[in-house]
Amino acid sequence: MNKKGQDSTGAASIIFVITAILVLYILLIPSDARDSLLDDNLISNGNDNGKEEDREYVLDEHVGRLDYLASSEKTYPINSFIMQTKTEANILVSRSGLSVIKSVFEDEKARVDFQANPELTGDLTLAFNIERSGGILSITLNNNLIFRGELSSGNSPHILIENRHLQRHNELVFEVSSPGFVFWRVNRYDLTNINVVGDVTDDSMSKSSQSINIRSADYDLFDTARLRFLPVCDDSVSGLSISINNREVFRGSPDCNVFNHIEFSKDIVYPGVNFLDFKISRGHILMDRVEIISSLDAPEPPVYYFEIDEEEYFSNGELNKYVIAGIEFTNPDRKRLELFVNGRIIGITTTDVKVERDISEFVEPGMNSIEIRPRQDLDISSLKVWLE
Image (cartoon, rainbow, N blue to C red; front, side):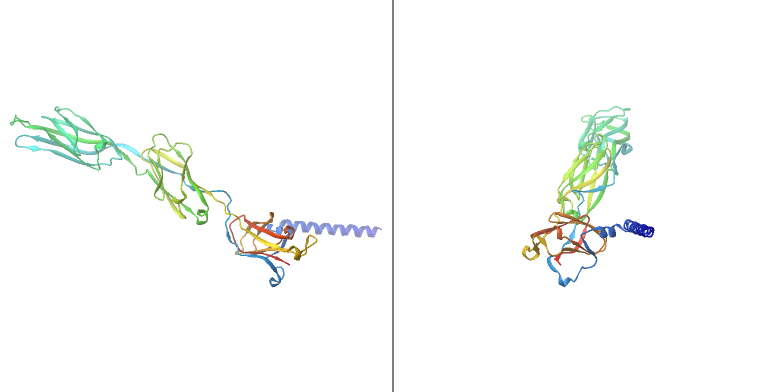
């Protein structure tokens, strides 16, 4: 009795040790291999089960590329950037002195030329000192009269110039009136320190160009698109314009410090590199959280159908053969997908080029369906279903 008890205890210890080793082995092996060991539906990974010529195929399809869409939206972020203009008072033109004379024998006018950008220049003033005066002084800018009157020596007038008279190339003309019947008289003005002063805006940092790259596969799924951005600014900002591929999608004043949304047509963008151009007329703005968001039409997962003849393969409601689904991939990378056989799911995670699953318990007499739902982008050479 003691001997039998000792043998029984020793056998139990050996079984316990073997079980512990097996459990530890299963826990330590890679997850793909562990899944293969534990998956009841697994027939083989990488090796065909039986001879292919003996198989009775009920489905043999080339699948091809399957794109995985993790979300109903695709976001293309753009780095934050600053646009600003700087306005300062500048002297557009300066002359130390000039004279205008009108008499019976003399008619001398004075001309002053200067350049300006009417869109970036404002609040113009013509200023000068009068050393000598006589008669009525007339001043025109680009043939527009901006002053006419009699001035006294020693004065320093400041004459406002309206922006509507301003051009890129400008000409100021000074002239004095004729003495008339007093023919012996000479009308004359001697002017010094002649300056045209105005507020000039530097817009060298008022523009920004950005780009995004849209994959062809994503573009094919585009439904609608919108531009979203958070402008950090104040009311001094004006004249914001936004163009995508040289087509304007917005012009106006942004809503500062809140998200702005601009919807635009899919036709404005195209697969590959797309360019976005931003510009302001005046002010300082930080364009933050800029992104294009596209709503996507999810691709329908492929569904294939096969038929199992009830009279030939079912006996008393029980299937008398195994039904195997085999998938062949184009590469040995890690792959994740789901098979839905008549709506019942089989998860697959593998690095093998070929996998096979026993789907017998999901099959019904007559027409059956098998759907492939990728959990990542996949390239599948073939999907086959056979009986053996």
